[in-house]
Image (tube, rainbow, N blue to C red; front, top):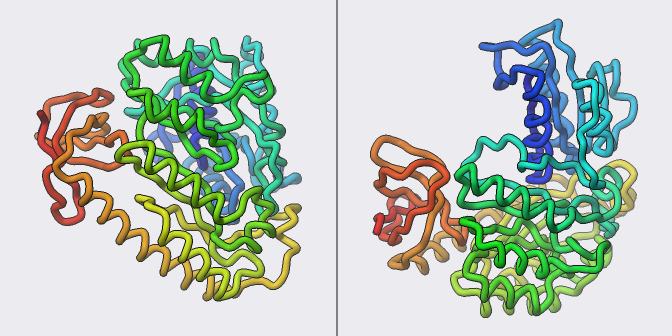
Length: 413
């Protein structure tokens, strides 16, 4: 069997959990023609048209690798596009049917007691930095986003189940774990808690893990969360916020529940309270109604935020979302040109952020080894190359020395 994963960190965790269950019965192989599988399971994303295309492309490749194989579609594309069975896939299980998927493949459902799909030990994870999905679903209804319709309402994984997984992953040698979810900042709202409560409990457990937080919606960030991150000593100084636009009219059309000025205040507070914060932002270009003035407002807002990198998207209308019906549409060439301008700004800010970190001492988690050199990622999300004998998953302390041909070089200390 071969499991192919597309999309977000929550999807990546889901696949790790699936693989852990499936490994009890199946021999698992990597994608490719060298070891064709009898079953291909594609855990899909549908956040953009491109994501849909990638899932179908994977199915076509699998057919070439083994024309007789069963090809199963799971995940968000299966939830968003009915009628895919028979046409392109032999079986289809949407994002809410992982238990049914396992029953189909294993003959039994997993013995878990929570509404969120998970594996008690954190699943089979092959990367150097572990993932733990602590939340699923979303109660917001941003006009461009299909995810709440595919993942359902927000719900939280119980605190003890999170801690059990973190403990298991620590015992396996992981020294960093990322907490992820569809709307991570909403963890605990449905059970009378908040994300800060979970972080405090993790701190009390005194695990040999540093914790990274995946994307947080700005409306989920309060002063207690900021203080918890700043004072923790074990939470990575790295946050990623979906800004999406710096124009109030576009934010209103997107149904984003904040104004540009409010976003600016949150971002500036984070950067002032958390030393050496690596701050990433999502920005969408070409949203319906985005004229030159609206795009200029986005650039003006970005000029005031000390971010370290951008994730840039051009608007991709999703069927059955309100934004798919909005007018006027922005021509593709205009969206692409705005994305190019943002990409240039992104390159400039990345280099500036790196130069501000030179000479500092940081901890990196080793991800890859190339001869005498290792590659690792710092707490504030910088990729560093350093000479070291350290093995994958281990944390080492390094001094950031120089930027050489766009590569950050460190020295182990």
